[in-house]
Amino acid sequence: MKPDSIHTALIGYVFLLLMMPIGGVAQANSPSAAEIRAYMDQAQRDLRDNQPDAAIKAYQAVLRLDPNSVDARADLGVVAMSTGNWSAASEQLDAALKIQPSNSQVQALLGLCDIRLGRTEEAERLLSDAFPMLHDPKLKREAGLTLVEIEFETGELEKASTFLLPLEASAPGDAAISYAAFRVYSELTFRSIQSLAINAPNSPQLHRALAEHMVNDGRTEAAIIEYRKALAITPDSFDLHYELGQALIAESHQESNLAEAQKEFESSIRLKPGSARCECQLAEVETLRSNPAGASSHFVQALKFDPDAACAKAGLASQLIDEGKNQQALDYLQAAVRSDPYDAQIHYHLATLYRQMGNKDAAAKEMETFKELRDVADEMKRALHPDSEHN
Image (cartoon, rainbow, N blue to C red; front, side, top):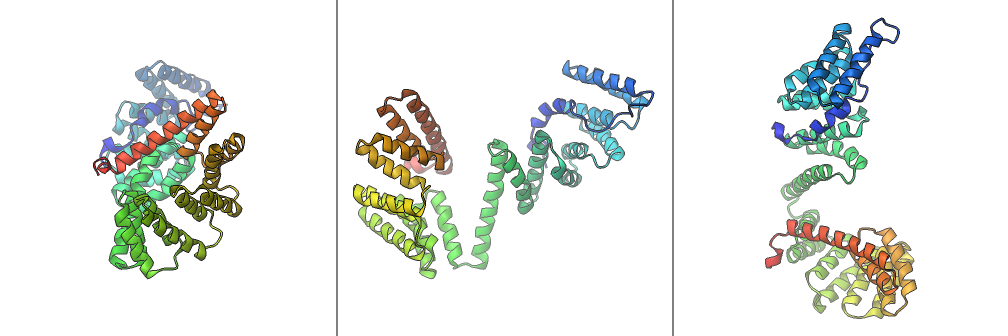
């Protein structure tokens, strides 16, 4: 693995790590304990003053008094890491780990050094052993991302995903973790489709996988063909009827598409009665036909099936706004946004309604949220479908 591919955030972190206890200093009742503590404190002051050379001398003084000081050796290793001296860092951290083999922090730091020195197999062993035991979030993040990179580079995607799960749980908004997850899961998806194509070339699963991929790629017309192929083999699939209906609406709002989509959603309901999401889709069909009464009946039915259905609450709120029933609409929209805080249109309708009701501050806040969500969606669309503007 190329050293530059490893996350450079480590360098900014190492000085913070020096302020944390790693191993153990001399026993409190030993003659040199006070002197060792004084040197360790001096080293930390030197680091805070950005004087690593002075800190190194203080740590070396500790080692003359106590050659088995895990703290001093580990901190010397971290200082060397901060200056890019990976060989010296590895030497000190290896010595610290020999003194205290169970120290997961030192183990992880040594693994990160080994990556920089091209010792990928040893780094993987050290980081894998240390990762479950790490508690410091920054070191755990760095170790986890490095492990994901190692496994991705060697094609061990399933192993990479096992490290991603705790990383995503601990920091769901972390961009580096999200990107690592995107790479791994995208490659796993491609491999799965490839496996289906080889082992089950005319299976409904392959046609559905291709259709879903095409929908995500913005090729709804091609996706519709694949959905129909899948349904020809398994006509009793609730999900296939539902997804085909969605693709038809996404492809065109012409009546021919709306009529076919309606049939697909109705087929879904026959196969799986009580689906709130199907009722919301049927309401969408009626809304596109400019039939508010028909849409309302489906929204009401959706709420009977699922009282928390955000799509139904937002749909009814939109109709209530048109009827001038603002307070009722507000109640529905506030409930809808609690159920689905990332739906941009709900925030837009809230902004519009708050403005009508004279609540300028709330309107501005909701409009800001709407624009943020819309911009994210637009950016994703441009990234995933760069040619769509020319089609």
